[in-house]
Length: 171
Image (cartoon, rainbow, N blue to C red):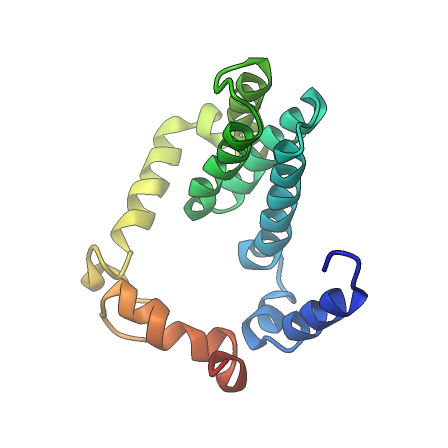
């Protein structure tokens, strides 16, 4: 499976014809770099599962911090390397996992230094972004062209046809 080049070609083709990715790739936005960062995190987690050395844990921590700074909603991905570490060793807490946990905030500060330099502005931005969520308060989101709706229904019914296109969303 990993040695088959047709898997990579098929993946690249499907990504190339995904309408939302094509549109967002013109801009320097979070949604175009996030799939790359996510796949790189999964790649590092695979090496953690194979009993990697300390370098991999440090790189995974920095990358997770940068990924979290790119888009906050990806922060639950932080637990995948921890789970991979737990699956690969009998000791849960050791120097390697502590290195990972130390370097996650360092990577976040590298990617988003205003969290430290201007914490009030950082907190206000997080508070504002949580208020415009469709689920929390639909009236505060004037930019939502889909109208107020439940977040679960939005991601199950509305988002796929606009992000994948109708043919891919039928798969």
